[in-house]
Image 1 (cartoon, rainbow, N blue to C red):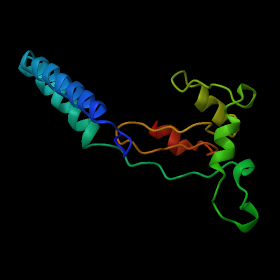
Image 2: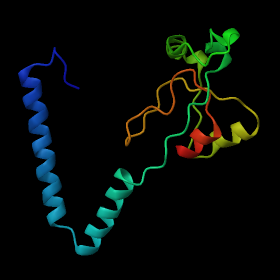
Image 3: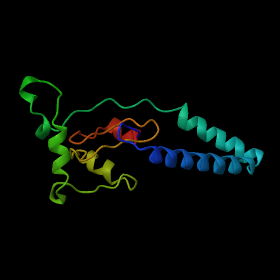
Length: 140
């Protein structure tokens, strides 16, 4: 990210890295067979054009909803975020092993302790304090 405090040398470093990456990609593309190129193009399209729709925001866990008496969906991301600094307040649950899905099917309400931002599209699907829904799980 570039901002007002970014130096010229940092921008030049970024540009040089991008230039190097482009050159490496061009060399790789030139060495691809027609079949490999077709597979690569299909993958590029699936990652850039055929994205599933983003899941709807589920809700904040009740512990992070100061406005719950008012019936609003607002939540205290800050409180949830800083609670995750203490390892006593969270646990890792493996998504790939199916453990997360089993826990949810058993009726456990699971809450994100951090931002989950898949790329693409680079938009958060979970924020600290948000309840993980089945729809979000399927998206992940």
